[in-house]
Amino acid sequence: MLKGIALVTGASRGIGRSIALRLSRDGFKLALNDLPSSKGLLEEVQSQIIKNGGQAMTVPGDVSVEKDVESMVGNVAETYGGLDVMVANAGIALVAPLLESTTQEFERVLSVNVIGVYHCYKYAALQMVKQGRGGRIIGASSVAGKQAWPFISFYSASKFAIRGLTQSAALELGKHGITVNAYAPGGVKTPMLEGIAKDLGHIANSGFSTSDGSLAIGTANGRHTTPEEIANLVAFLASKESEAITGQTVSINGGLYFD
Image (cartoon, rainbow, N blue to C red; front, side):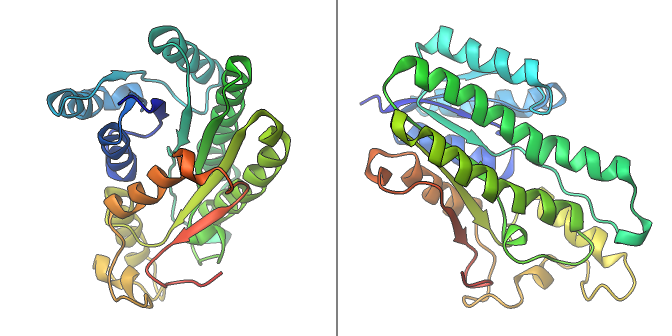
């Protein structure tokens, strides 16, 4: 049974890949986005969805470029007949001591993690309002968007910003039957986490080792959260059953941080 049409950004690997696979299993037609440089990985996800009996198209583009996002939302709507779920998952992380960082580095992180999510929220909402059948908009925050961490100040700032953007969008779009929420993972075993751990390990007195296990210390369950577990939460937020939930940034971190 077709549940609707979903667009997932940053879908070529990690959390985005798991979200796309889960939404497909739940009965959504999928549109898969990532940078053009990840075309091969994106097509692998598409092939897996099709092999499992689902429907998927690829819409490569850079979420930090407004025209790219406007175009990919339009492409999905024209091809599939609309858009019901937007998962603005794409993001980047940069590890740098504040006193050694640059404005250019800060702008790069904000352009993807904040401006990119803004583009996704805006153009998904415009399409959903036009359709008149409501919708679900879901963004990616982080535990670092609720409790700042050292040496990832840009990333923390960007993920805090998602919470404010999500709340404001929820207030404006509720009258159209559109909910807007975000998910806030802790340490999730992905290539991004491995990169963060490696970079932190190179900073003297950072308190981290290059072992990814260092980022699981402090969780109540003593382990990382898996991409599939994040996808489970997103699947609920994308469902009709989540209608009463909006403006929320939901923590999913194994008890690393309590709201």
